[in-house]
Length: 629
Image (cartoon, rainbow, N blue to C red; front, side):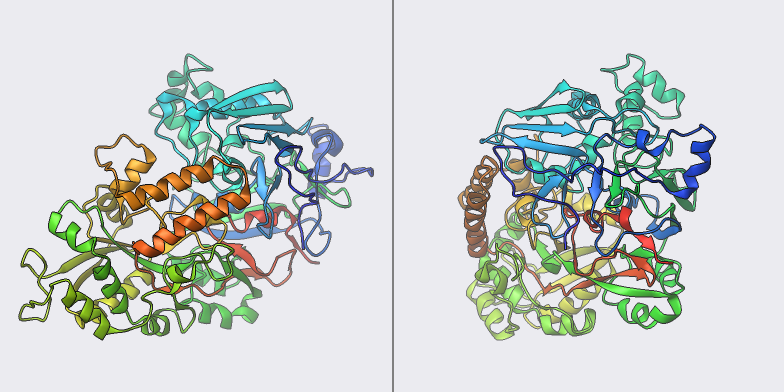
């Protein structure tokens, strides 16, 4: 099952094309006919590129009509927009996540040492307002991201200062790097990589001082405090401005500004994709995303049949029974998703703690091993995850080519006797009247854990561990807290322990190895060492121990090669060190997830991968969804 016509990938020549131009005449959705007949809209052949992207549907060619309904949680849920209607990057992942292929770019080529990336665009491609989309737009977006004045905006893995953009001609754009980056294509295909096709120069240029001297005045005239705020709200991953041009299958008609309960989208008459019969996509006319403040409300909408296709926020193990039971009355079915995450909850002691006594204790591998052995994961699986999953550490999934058995399975058995032996062996033999062991400072060992209040499963897991660790003399002080407070504590390095799920179970491990070595600010077990690796300039940055620095050096060597086999070999060495060091404590390997789809919705895949960097459902091409008559 493939969504893109593909050829084998070569890094020394043109990699692939999305499909041949169609010989037959193109057709459009009936709702556009009146506008064409009135002369308000050009004929479909004039709105499409000369060589449109040809999409082969998953099941069948669809028919036009209908409204796709989903939900947004709160006022900052842009992630669902980016993953669903908004996944139209320059190059894209395919459904099976086998590689990177052309999307907005018609074709691309990369030199041998991964320092030159040339992208060829489609002649006649247009923004959703009908203006030409050209290489000038790509250069504008890259220059904007490189601007020192705008430097606060960072997408994971992109080093703007090492990139130079060059317009060869209107349809050819070249990125030249000062250092090789064998992961640039993968990052451009990820959910973070769409920045480069989200900023139309003719629209956003008025907010950028390098293209308009009056940028600040323009921004203030439009209600923003500064040009940089206008750029953030208008030209990248926020969707406050409904007028900005996009390349999506649907164009926004109401702003996502916290005031509108219903965020609406209409078909983009300039969308660049067609099906194999020459019908311009998308099939579905409109998209509605209702804004709500609670997951419980979204669940009620699901069981009432008011969600047509989604798994955002509500598709948890705890909610599955009620959602499963309401399928017939709600008129929907459940399709499986393959969770690329490798853990439901990872406990991260702060190895770079400011308190020297806590740092000394937390850096004892035997202490971390004892905590792991003191966890009854089977109880966690039964109570929190309805018996689904298996004991697992923070490691690539068993189905991954990167699987490391030692890292995945060590210290996962429930063995409080051995845990107590390890703790005694560390000299932690004294206890207070409550049975809590005394630390190196003579005080009871009390570990504070703040779990984000919007992630209830974390708190459920933590409360079980509170009781389990009492059996080995450790006091876990687990509390719920608002997510912003949790992250403020983590990023200030003032936390004892953090809990989060485990991204990086499949191919995303290479791009986001946060749990395998201190890679970014999400590596909560070693913020100081991560700051050092990121070269952030922060006063928190601290040079790591030799074994951690070795991992960092290996990753830089990985990034400097375009050889995929060599990348995996080097990453294997990183994982071996992670297994020896045992930085973090995993709990449960996630079972497969699910997505809700209306029963008459066509071209819905079963078994799509689910994770952040691979932005499910985007790579399945939501423009091909249709309602069966």
